[in-house]
Length: 314
Ligand code: SF4
Image (tube, rainbow, N blue to C red; front, side, top):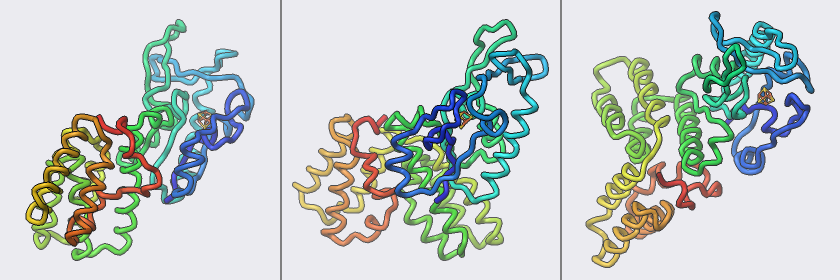
């Protein structure tokens, strides 16, 4: 999996002050499972160090202005933004991690100003905006938001689910699509029940349209679903559905223990990994293959341990 990352988060000294903002999660944890391609449109345009810039609202739209000289640098930055955009998308990338608050890279967190110097709000940085408009379903997140355990877990699940689809697409067939949909059942349900059902209908009525059309429709809905955020309510619902597949096998005591753990998880007393581990244990014990093959049990490498924290529940 190839992920594009703001160069400064990778420890490259490309910031306006020739410093970096090395990100520990990106560099020490996610790097075990992803390759990175870096970008820095400002370093490309102005070098490092350089005077800082800001986004200023004007009648001609947002302009990029030098904080030091007041010079309008919009066109110069736009050129390198386009060049970096083309460079990263020349590869098949599976996601982007941006540096927060930057006038180039911020994803909804770049400060904007009025002509008179007053702050006016926040928007996307120039580079982030271009990426978002061109690839709205590509997983994208800011390093700042990734400090939130819930957002981090959601983003990483999206990243791996997106990659799974891209790999599946290489050798897709109707039989494989049926399998793909089956093993993603609970993951999709944990994101968006309505889309999950629509996807089921699409796969169920597959003979009604050519496969390439079906695959395009499936891809659009699937990528829309995995971009949604989970919630405690949706997670609880999925855990209960999974427990339903064990109903006929479990003893009264086993059932009680599992439901107690699901209740505790919904009450944020124990993290999701607790009822999930019990579900897996029972699925192994009673050989319930349908549950064991579910991506929701392990949607990304377990070593990332993102479901071990109560904070990953919201
Ligand atoms: S935030 Fe973006 S433009 Fe700024 S230094 Fe980092 S990579 Fe370069």
